[in-house]
Image (cartoon, rainbow, N blue to C red; front, side, top):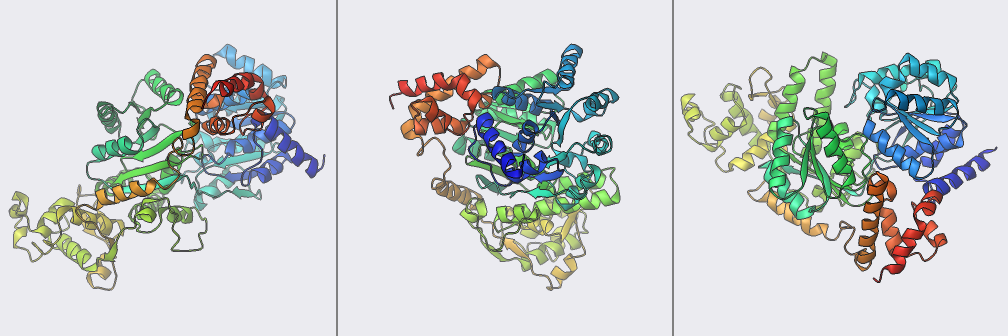
Length: 618
């Protein structure tokens, strides 16, 4: 079969099985390369269609595609979705009994599987490697491939052993996929998985439907409650916190505020975690408050927001976590509350870790890049894209969908303010934290200020023209720019760095975002008013005239999903329901033309959907 025939066959399978009319971005090139027996590395954002890049070639090639995946939840959801469209798929992981696992193994050997999802630790056992050696294999897909990198944000030791695939199965094509990897991580993926010389397919990292917003942390829980209540009432969302205690407290506070929220962290009983995750996946409008133990591999497409109450460790982690919002392409928010304590805490965690000096240097560099994203006065999306090596020609580019573009902050020369702060830190002995320095600068004669006689210093009161909130912003930004840093040996103390000398001498200019007493509230309300002009509310203007039919379709989907024991989005995605409501198909042929309706879904649900359309009077 020549390339033209293979391409036509691929498009036919894409349409008949998955109900999709065309490929997106580099999908077609990846599918063709892998179907032809080539290896490759794929970098594609969450929601960009990575799964299709290995699912479709597995159907086009002889044998079974082996998908290495780190999470049981991901395997379960993807297999459920594949079964819905008529693909023979199964899992092989610790959730199966011996009898169940044995049955899956026999199906693999009999050639009765198109795709088999395997946990990395299971795959590396002698039994499983021996099983694969006796089976007809179409390809290996290593999902979440950044887990193989010790420099990555989510290193998993069991992924190191996957180098055995290139050694034991050199003639079986391998595809490594990830949504986040800087140059260092990409090279380690290539080295460890034996992908030297294989092409890298890099899709755009831009998620234009996600609005990025980072606010000055004041009372984080109150700010979060307001954000959800005012902009995402009734929506599904994920809130990330650094500690288990904070997860519990935040979930309780949201519940008390009338927002249905559930905690999720590694300290909870496994059955409780599973129950909370199932509710989040299967019910509408649930908010999960979690540590980073939650989320990777969660396929739920209608998460409308991801919020961070603590600073992540890196831009990769931030991008991965925020990418769980809006997988269906609809408008969604990535919101984060951030303050000086976040920088100090993350820096201390790096300094106190058992990692090598090289690891600590890389970790500090990654933290600095994230802090720069949080403090930038320019377009956040542009900075994100540049971090991942995606060129943005215009340095003054405005994306129109981040807080800085929608409500540009004022920027001013803050060199004199920085000099006052650095002088204060120096003259007080570099032994005190931010609040004490601010007390001295403002001229507040606290007991501690008087105890150390800092009210006698020349810097006492030299910053009285700014209030406490404004000085907090100055301290945060001077730390973010690297002129002050947390002293790992003195809890909370701020000390001068080498670059501080240039600032004090007037050789280094310090530009600061301007904070006023009401700036956060002002920027929030301004952003909210502009938000109305963006395509932010999927079920308002665009679908108001179809609301009755859409509600009926959603109710039918929920009941169908409950009966089949699968998440609602496995039955049909929101976008497919929207398409049905907008087009109002009157025949099976018309319904088949709706994106997301393949042959099997038409067979299973066609009559019921047409009956709903016919009975709807709106």
